Length: 282
Image (tube, rainbow, N blue to C red):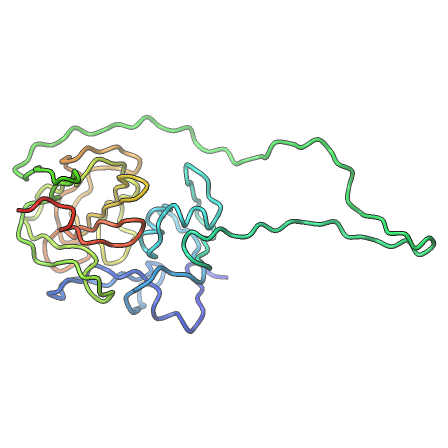
């Protein structure tokens, strides 16, 4: 088995996450970063077959985001406990439906028949005192340093649900539930313009590993919602950092696309939803 994904031929063309294409066709479809020369049809449903080998820089949240899964469901499917640490080389499986737990195999001892007496005996070893499970040691949690909120001219008026606009600028791309179109909104702006956290949360991904999103930040707001901020010029936060609504998290840019803009998504239990239903009216 090589690095990356192994898929059944019948589904190979339709399993990857829809990227940041807009109604003006100025985006790039997301494809697996381990196959930079490949193209694929936009994903309409979460991947439910095959597997993925974790690469350096991946997080459970970025893998779930890429393949259309809710991070909690993907963790449950693969038996990954809190704090949801994954390591390079680890296999993440997508077989089954999101949220469906993998069956646990129960080992049974073979039974051997004594040829002299005809009686059956079990080769099960004597029962011993149960030993505590040995888990790999994980690094002690580092203290989280929260960067101060950076003043800017960007409006921080909150919606009834507590969200703010992540940037000032004209709306140039709208959400579409059609898998071939935009999974978020696109906001035009100036190079280096502040990009703000749309709500309180924790940074669960900061990097450029998801093709088509450029320099990307993903913020987990709750067990239900995450938000994503793509095409940044520079990221100002790190994974594990707590951020406050209205805090500057990045500088707007054009990485992964052909013009300066912010691509913004909100996902509810892994599924993209229209950000305009959550943001305050302008």
